[in-house]
Amino acid sequence: MKSASKKLTGLLFILLACTPLLFFVITEIKQQAIQHKMKQQLETKMLQVVVVAENNIQWIKKGKEILINGRMFDIKYIYKGSHGLIVFSGLYDDDETMLVNEVQKKQQREKKTGNKLLSYLFQLLQVIPGNPTEEFSKLSIPSNNNFPEFEQRLSTQSIAILTPPPQI
Image 1 (spheres, rainbow, N blue to C red):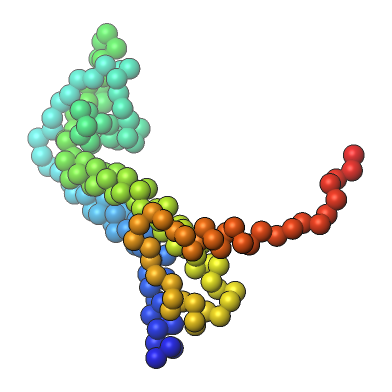
Image 2 (image 1 turned 180 degrees about the vertical axis):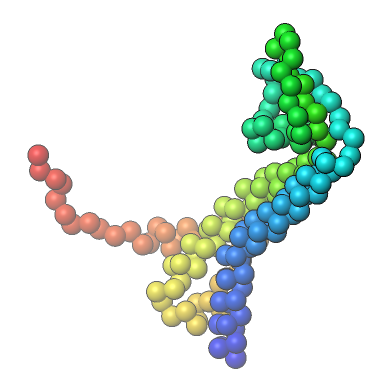
């Protein structure tokens, strides 16, 4: 029974550690698929034309993609107009805009929960040198911001360094 619990805890730890990588890979695949679809549409669909003042251009990818009013715009042609205006012809990429917004929202949520997960990881690292089979079964993911066990362990684990200060 202890062996199964130990394997399950190890599997959960590995899964927790791999989650950000998995999210990144899935997002990258989605973005590549959207970009491929837009390249095809740039060749077949009727292009839209937008005019932007040169000092107001927000490049996403220089020469390929800009941000206009919060929407991604894939560029097929660029023309330098007069009076500091740039004329772009291409297509709005609403699929990629939604994907970017989704990633930004997820990053904001993860930033809030990241401290909890980091504290949990430190708890796990402090348990490992002891008897892992006993202590892993006692460890649980905290459900709030208070980590009394973690704070107590940190305060009792100070190490005295008995080296003299450097001489000049």
